[in-house]
Amino acid sequence: MTFMEVIAINSAIYGIAFSLLLCLASVAVFTANFLLTLIVMITILGVLTAVVAIFYLASWQLGAVEAISLSILVGTSVDYCVHLVEGYIMAGKSIPDLNSPKEIRGWRTLAAVSHIGTAILSSAITTIVASIPLCLTVIQLFAKFGQILAINTAVSIFFTLTICIALLCIIAPVRFRASFKSSFIAFLAVAVVYSFCLGILYFINLKVVAIPGPAGQPLFPRDS
Image (cartoon, rainbow, N blue to C red; front, top):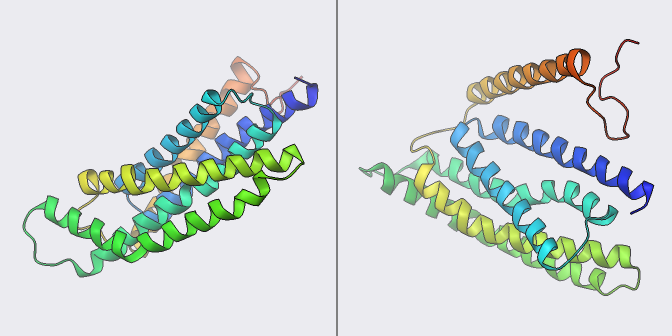
């Protein structure tokens, strides 16, 4: 592995972490609900774990292409499950007269799948089909990225239509309705938590040990 590949992989790891943190903050604000955010994050982490497992089974080395692709694919993994969760939220505007929370969750999930399921499935299929010509190119960089894109899309839609739907039926909020107030409260909560964590990292970097950044330099400047 060359020096540039080491730098690329190190930067990609930070890219994956930053993408996950940004994804978590965005989902938390737009869904404005802890359980829905948890469902989305479980789905995303499951997709990333499955994709990395496929890398291992295919005997692919974690080179620069794979590392950079993983940081990009965090954003594509969240697409399908967030649309499904948004459909679940929209279904809360017209809940029928049902008695048990299980029946309400099931009805809202079915309404979400009926409303958005065909669209996300069609989107996944067109993405996979569009990546096939990229997989057949002579340039290995493009061919490998096309393969990773097709694998990630297939795994993402599979997890969305299985794990995400199952979690919505089991632990999703029953009568939750998103509002500007709930989104604003979620934004404040995310800002406070992230600021607190950033302060802890800064203290560790300043007083305990220097935390290396993407390029190998300290993540925060230290006094000499």
